[in-house]
Every structure is written in C-alpha cells, then in structure tokens.
Length: 426
Ligand code: PMP
Image: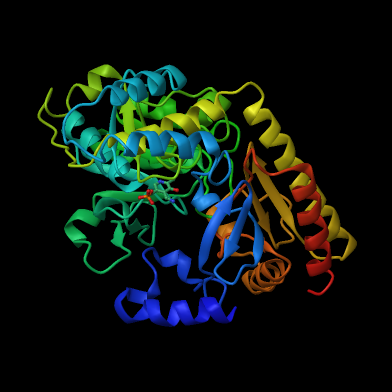
C-alpha cells in the first residue's frame, strides 16, 4: 500500500502516531494503517483504489452501510440551513422523543458529542444522585477515556483501582473497582463489603471491547438485583449495542432494565454524537433542572441529529435487525467451518449484527482472561491475509466485528471464501 505508506509518514509529522485515535494505528496487528477516501454500502476504498468489504463500520455507527442516500440527503439538507446555533432546535426534541420511545427505560435523554462524554456524565450523575463515590466496572469492558473509567483492577477484587494511564490521579482511580465480567458471585462478594458506598455499576451488556462476549445467563439480572438491594445506579453502556443487537438495544434483547443508558455510534449515524438517559427521577438531577453539571457547545448539533435520525429511521424498518442477525450467523458459521476444515482451533460469539472470532481451543469464551489467552499472533496473520483478500476487519484481536444492513449475501459468501483461503495458509 505505497500510497497509504506515504500518507502515514506525512501524518506522523504533526499527529501523534499519525492517528487521531490509537487503535487506528495498527499497533495490535503490526504494519501500517490503510488510508480510506470513500465508503459506499458495505465497501470502503483506499487512497490506492483498493476495494474492501468493511466489517469495522467506523467502529459501529454505519449500521445501514456507508453513505446511505437517506442519511447523506438529511445531512445536506440540514447543513444548508447552517451548521450550529447553540440554541434549541426542533430536531433535538424529535430525537429525544424517538430515543425514549425506542428505549423505554429512558424517560429523559441528554445529547452529547461522544460515547466518552455519555459515560463520564452518567457516572457523575450516579455519584451526584447517590452521594457516593465508588463505581464498579468490569474487566475488559471499555467505557471511553474519562479518568474514572481508565482504571484497571488491583491485585484482588477488593483492592484499590490502579490508573491504567499516567495522568489519572490515583486518588480518583481508587474509587473505581474492577470485577471479572460474567462473574455475579464476585459482584455479590464485593457488594457484601462495600455495597453501601457504590454509586453505580457500569457494564457493557454485551462486551464488545474484548472481542465480543455476551453476558452469561443471570449476569445482567443479577446486577439488576444487587443494584436494587444496595441502592446503586445500574448503567448499561449501550454505546456499541444500542440500536444494533435490537432496536431497543441489549436491554430489550435480554429483558433487563437499567437505571441509566449510555448511547453513541449508531445514534449519530457517523457524526460525533453520544447520549445518556434514564429514569426521570435520576435525570432531573442534571443541570439546569438539578445541580449535577453537564453542558456542550455543540451538543444536539442539528446536522448530527439529522444524520442520527435518518439512520435510526432506517434501523426501524421491519426485519432490519433480524436480517443483520441472520447474515452475521451465516458469516460466523461459515468461517468456523473453514477453520475446522483447515484444523485451526477457533470459536466465535455473535449477537445480532455483532460478532467475534477467537483463535482458541476454548469452545465458549465468556470472560476477559479467556479472551486474552487467544492466539494473537495467529489473529495478526489472519487479519493481514484477509486485508490482502480485500476484507477489512478491526485491526485488533480484541474488538468486535459489525455486519451492516448493506452487506449482501454475496459479500458474506465472498468473505467466507476469503477466510478459507487465508486459514489454509496459517
Ligand atoms: N462505550 C463503549 C461500549 C464503547 O465501545 C466506546 C467506544 N468504542 C465508548 C464507550 C466511547 O465512545 P467514544 O469513542 O465515542 O468516546
């Protein structure tokens, strides 16, 4: 990819690492990132005019495919009226009404500009409402890069949280407790000691940032019960799962109702958008109604709202999620069959349009420890082989893949065949 190589070299002069978000730099898979210039439907074209079937979908937003005509038209029409007013617009109410209809656990919702802002504020709100400081999160779940959430586990479940980035004050990190995902007994044990100090529990209801790991039966229900018992706020981070695994997100798919929900990605249709919402009695604590402060110059931006609404309307078409789920299942089963043929140990998880492939003997990957034991070297070879075949997977063994409504059966077949050729060389 000589063209991308030149662009990447130039990018590194004034952009740290040549990228505006670290995982784009291909550090997880080696080599250099591809620079793209165009997307349409399920495809991306590089600056060197190579065409790829895309399973990254801009890390989630493009659930209807790239450059969908409805979304582009909505953006163009909105942009023609001006880009931002810093004052209320009717489309913000339209968005809020629709979100509260699609996600019934939300009585009220506030728009922000990223998933990071949504989760950061949800945590502040949980703390502000309960008057408590501690937050519980889970190993391998990612909730954006705010200080309280860039924390990993200490050596034992109940030891103090340790910052996992310089710049995060230890005094703040110690309020974040990290527990093993899918281990409800560990949560019960932790709460039996410190439950009365826990403001909130934040969880990806389907983990998508350690590859793709669905909740085991009873895990989300158990979190709901524990939060009720101890008066802690249950936050589902549906930035990735929202409007993807079902129109109502993972909470609709599993039938468990959180107190607060964070959203991003699909809700902006590719524009920088996030949202958080939940029960009225909690949301009324947010400024200007209440004392918990939160604000944003560009929040609820009309062009971004237009892109998000157009995308949500596409996702509301009958059969939208069912079709994506069927295609995803076929993709995953097809790749697993090829792996079996070529005697490569592999397992997979998939929920709706979200999937994860694991190079492992373990038939059922359910937690972070298992995810990190997978053969990362083999993933790297697979990733580059697929790239060569014109299939763009997430450049990390620890990210979920996404199928969009735009992927055709022929795209899925082509991907399975490509995977077969690559797996035969591993
Ligand atoms: N929560 C989850 C579950 C995410 O997957 C992400 C981003 N991958 C975030 C929060 C942060 O969102 P953003 O990158 O928009 O800040």
